[in-house]
Length: 127
Image 1: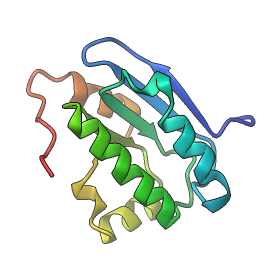
Image 2: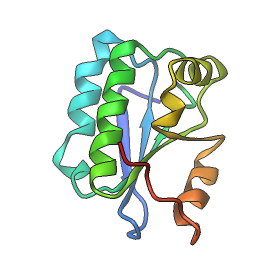
Image 3: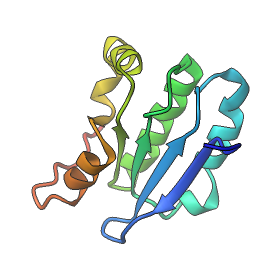
């Protein structure tokens, strides 16, 4: 997917929604750039964020911490963090660490979009 670490596309306005696509591992040498991108000005207006994890085969503990912090920021705005298409090993690690309680995990971006746009949308859990 080129040289980009994360690409953010806005999609729709209700709620303000972003889709971030990661290009490779979320490891210590890339985490600073990922955190900077996810904390950027263009992210400030987004309430719901889908992270496409299809290409992520490794998720370092620093990456997990960054995702929890991001979920907290989105929850504070009434939004939520959705993880789409995680690799089986990444999904297993998230579940083993209990982080599946912090994020909504979906099999695909399309499934995450359906969940976000559903009229029966479940509010984010309070922490």
